[in-house]
Image (cartoon, rainbow, N blue to C red; front, side, top):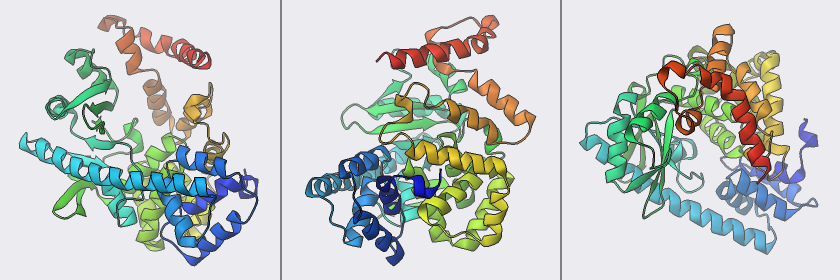
Amino acid sequence: MSRNALSREFCLIAAGCEWPASSARDQRLRELAALPLDWDLVLKLAHRHRIEGLLHRALTDAGVEAPEPVRLALARSAASIGTQSLLQSAESARLRRLLGERGIDCVFLKGVALAALAYGMLGVKQAWDIDLLVRPEEAGLAADMLGQAGYRRSIPGSEVSDAMFQQWMTISKESLWIHERSGMVVELHTALVDNPRLLRGVSALSEMQLVRIGPGIELPTLRTGELFAYLCVHGATHAWARLKWLADVAALLRKAGPEETERLYRRSVELGAGRSSAQALMLCARLLELPLPPKLETELKRDRAAGWLEALAVSAMSGRGATELDDTVFGTVVINLSHFLLGRGWRYRYSELARKTRNPEDQLTMPLPPYLHFIYPILAVPRWVLRRYQLSRR
């Protein structure tokens, strides 16, 4: 799909994701806003891609006057994002302190730490949860801390026993927790990515930097090289279906500059995330006007698989309008197939196939004794078809 084939509304919100502001970006926004637009669709797209704060800031900076209902809706969302960022900052600091009191090291992924690194400020990047990474052997202790801190487990549900929760965490890399009073959401992670071959040799809790997010508040997050690779793998496994993920990467790279961008790409290749980062760089150049070193851009375009992944991501971002991919019956089929192209070699593809046939939800809803666990891969496809059929009946 060429850029000319993208809707005007999508091009407008994409331009609104370019950070920081520039005269060229503001001019593009004014030119796009002067065209006939479905502003209700603009609002819906901004919500789906979770970039209302960025778009509101960009339109304001460019002097674009959106229709009053749209302007007010974006302003309300932007104010809510700003408030949520402050609350998440304070809660992140509290969680780090509570974990530290129990001797548990942690890393904060994305969220306010990334906002401070990439945007230099809080309040424009939207994050609906706090992503917290701990060592696998300390997941139980971290879960106990979250329970004592006022959180209840949502995925897997609180009805699941502690023993079954431990089993879940050996298969799934995350669990979801919701604070009973504030509604704050925490994702507790024990691994950076679903397939460790996409991020080889990264020991997250030893590859850290401290990021200042407010007076007296510092949070540990990944070092920039490992962070870039992680963000690319995360976005690629979701086919970059939301522009917010790509906007974060582009903002981080613009701040780094072209030479550092190439160094970060080379580091991602060493870690096994080369295809994911190639896809991300090509998308940033195509949709968010990120300048790439000419030799690097030529090198990236020689990889046919990366080019196919780029086209797939553009389609995933824009092809279904304001509809989430997960809300369509077979919207994620091609994305799941694309995962086999993110790594190289038969060992990677075999590991990806094995991962896709180990669904932790199946093991919770249909528990079998260990000697019958070989049945789960056999049932993986029919169980997946059943779940998609149930979705179509909603």
